[in-house]
Image (cartoon, rainbow, N blue to C red; front, top):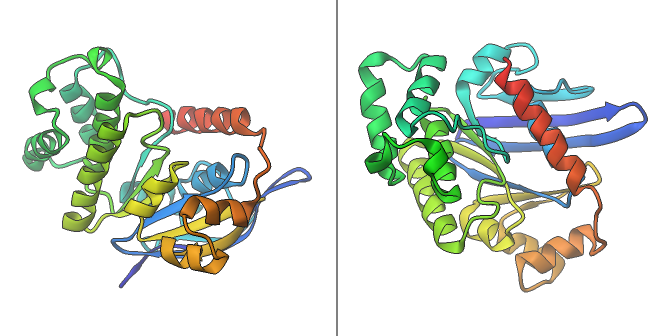
Length: 265
């Protein structure tokens, strides 16, 4: 199975602070890979390096065989990304948001309309295609963002806290659709989430990062067996500790900055 994401001894340092320290992992084609960690553990910094928003201090990254630090534009064509914060244009309709994305990613005109209809239908938004996004519920906006992320048929899709704040029914529906596209199109999915049961149910493998270092990688069952715990949440706490972290606000601010940087490119 080809390797879609290859990270080797990745490091990012800001002055005296080491945010990511000697991180190594691989994600094969078609895998749903969950990246878990406490607030401030290095998840956001890692994602920003993977998606060309930050340059590593050292180490290497390969996305579908490309080096995103050098082949930035080519690498961006290979992946889609859904940020934690909203990135839709509320003053446009769902269809207009999709069409703009298709143009930006140079989706061929002959397949554009068919692809948009298929995705909006799958995510149960086709009937609302001409409605303005500002009239959508939070769950509908999230479904539209993820549908848009799949539009240019990316080889890899990055999802950063995609179901944060959504009700259980919407979360379940959203993952059903993502898993369908993962299976039918063999899209590799790299996700972060704080919902442990979600990671256990959806991800093929899970990596846990803490204090900038990978502390464990494996299936949910393997992580439970490794720690001798009955649930993934208990295994996570065993590996990262139970101390409350105070870095949530900084993590959100950094992701908002990443979204702004991305929109300017």
